[in-house]
Image (cartoon, rainbow, N blue to C red; front, side, top):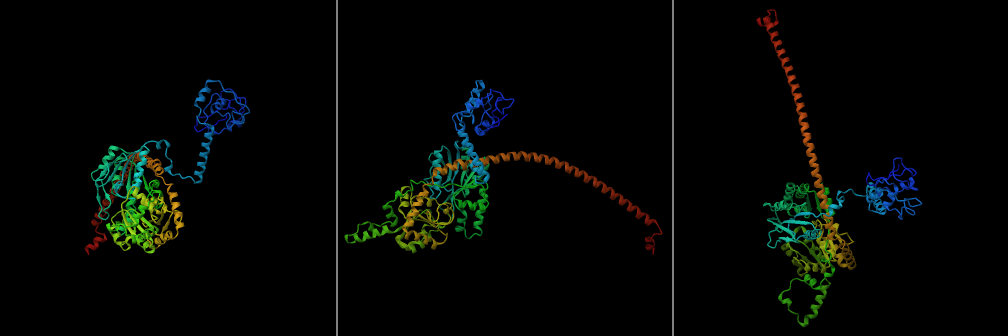
Length: 620
């Protein structure tokens, strides 16, 4: 009896008795020709159902005629098409036959074979993040987003990341409730239709630009109780992340932490008076993220640091950029003039006399020949913007435009005062003004070594700028040296100035880097990044949380059983030991009494005898 086993163990086909190699217990009419070689030549991945009507019903149901497996039809190797059985079982078997064609089954089987071969050779990763059920990806998610500081009124690099994430989660049909601290009157109550719960918070004395909270009144906790999300996504590090750990444990919700601020670098800059500030920061990060089901970092470099410090369950949150908003087509001459020059006074706004028109035109043309260096972001100490003074000293034709605000702005104005009109503080720009400022510059400078990713670098590349950045943090994951930008050693102003000077003097190199930077940025889309976040990373955290629940359940049952058995066994053991000890004590007590009685009797007899030596000594 020959059997062809399909994907399910009960799906077999029987060779009729009349056929060569057939079994004695097979039923159904015999075929004109169906040899064992022909039947076993049929691929086992076809999933053939059990057929009481024989191979003829199988051939009719699987529709092998005219396919690549048969010659003129029927089974492989058969010279003629077998007759279809007329039994009622044939119709039933035809209805139960698989709906897919043999070609699809063959392709699927070949793909599975290739994956198995790659897995055995070690080329295919066994990462559980890839093993997500396809059915679960179509289900909408309920996400509770806890962000600190707020991405809506606070100017920061990750604000665009969260806004784009919310935009595409709405497109995918997911639900999001947001809780964030804010003390500004323009704090929104909703964003893209998602409700925003504004939490009360305070500002740090060392860094007053950031509003933080511990949710002392429990508004975020009540939001979680009413919303009942599938998972909690909280930004880290911060006080709200510690509170989110409590909420996740209390309500038994999966927890995802995303790391955006490189705390050890900030601790070195702002708390350099404290010993071991960097090590203490890493210990805090490790302790905090040990409660997360999944930790998201923004660059492979930060991921390597996390792994070096023993922080597990970490993955990279993919980057993205809106290439329509940040585009070279937004280049504007009027914006370039505004960036190059400081705000004009009333005397400067009057038209020059005719005698000086030629000089004004020459000044304007020379102004257009200058190279505009641009920085966009917070004006703070950790950004190391004061090192750009070395660039201006070595490149007299360069002008610097600083877009943004921050606690270090007043100190930077004093630091760059000797350069006069060559340095412009543009303030905070948004929307079209920011897009035009990016596209109207020539070179983007990022001397900071504290960036976990550097979104402004991506936006500058999408705007068609040549970028020079410090080789630290997450910037090397964006800039490939001498390919789409230039990298300089961190905390080395002279090396950074050399790189900028190289771009100013070589126009061909600058155009080459601009073209490659724009091409690379076009491949970083927010839609694909959010899809991967939702379909792979979020669901991986949910699956891990459920696995831990099952493990804790069975572990609890086993621990109860173990405790019961161990208690009973230990009780018996202790009782036996107690009885043995009691018996031993009885023996020792009896021996002691016997020894005491014998010693007392011997002493009394010796004292009554007159001829004893002691009696003689005593009398003498």
